[in-house]
Image (cartoon, rainbow, N blue to C red):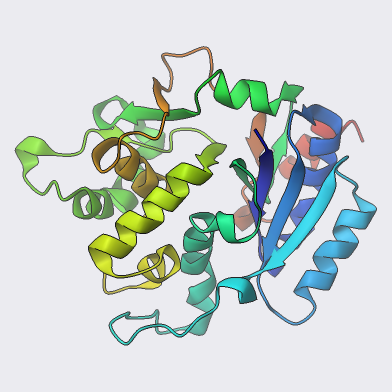
Length: 270
């Protein structure tokens, strides 16, 4: 079983990559390599390579750029009106087309503004004989999830095709950070999206003619409602001791605050 760490970043988040890579070196074993995909902006790839050299994660660093998934967008895809909005939507699809960047059997996906905070053998923790997928029931979510409910609920209803209030999709599929995506499952997701919508994942998520979609909620709906589960075991977040308690998100949209700097220093011992 080859498990890679997969990171989709973009130039605005490159400043956070050193801390993620340093945390990987300090805390993480049980994976093969780090795969980083950044946007195809001029100089972006070179910048990431320099970051990898200066912040050796203790494993091979493989770089890809979004040029690898660029293609003509069909006429039936309605793109965001502003070019700057493409990246946010495109990165969702790239996470569901990670198999174009590595031959791994599975990846553990993290965002570039996250850090590992405790020692972890990633392959053992993520699988226990089966890949694990965490979820929570909507009615068990707390006030801090209200923004997520408002943002993702319409898209989940649409993608699950459960529009009847009496038969709504009951699961929130991203109650925690860190996502295990197997090659078999991601290729099954790609086939489902192509068979159903005639689109690749990148096209699906970039198409603003469709509801606003959450990448991991959408993938979770696919696993539970449109596949045989691909060998995943579903765990209830909050009711399991097996949750991934080894990740911290700095939330890059808040900027490099004093709080973020303090947390980085605490985690990395700097």
